[in-house]
Image 1 (cartoon, rainbow, N blue to C red):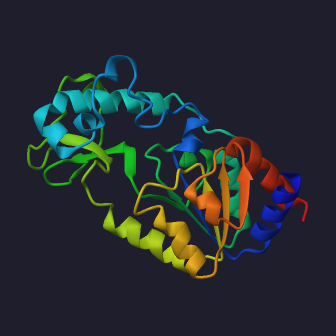
Image 2: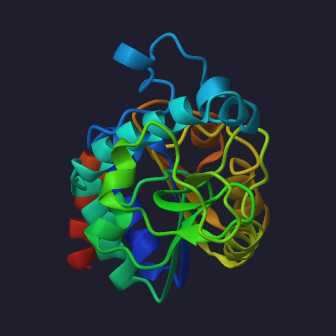
Length: 248
């Protein structure tokens, strides 16, 4: 493993344009359960479609609101782990660094990352489900049995995340694809590599000549095509990679 870490450090130290794609595994190391793993306790008997879809929101907006307020509380009580901090440090050492995350939490930003593209949205932001108007969440609204109403049109407020059946945010997606086309290294961290279309990003980068580095406890479809596969927790491996870069 140490040899792979040194190889990854060499590649990243020489890179001019790096795209880092992160998935649920990074946040899981901080204690943020994946979407499906979070359906425990009071939420264990609800289907994901009930909690994250337009149909589910229309059928029971109060249920969906209470679920996401519970998730938001969990995120706010969670701290970035060494993997988050290492990526923020890496960003400072690469001329052009773009972090594309599938995670809806703000742990990357809280660790110091600046160029973050939330391709599945952000649970820390709210908007109107009808007109899209941004809504600053008030403390009292968190405990309401129903979602608050939009100041502009009176529609229900929802978290600004991508639900089942919804399109990815156009501008963010365009920026992510453009960065993948131009990068010379793509670092993939803690993602299963099976959620499309995001899973296409490493393939696109590789087709354009980029080196693919995958960091994951488990072997995934991305691991199989990666130039370097560093098997293990990102919070353990990434700090070692950054430390190795510092010695070069």
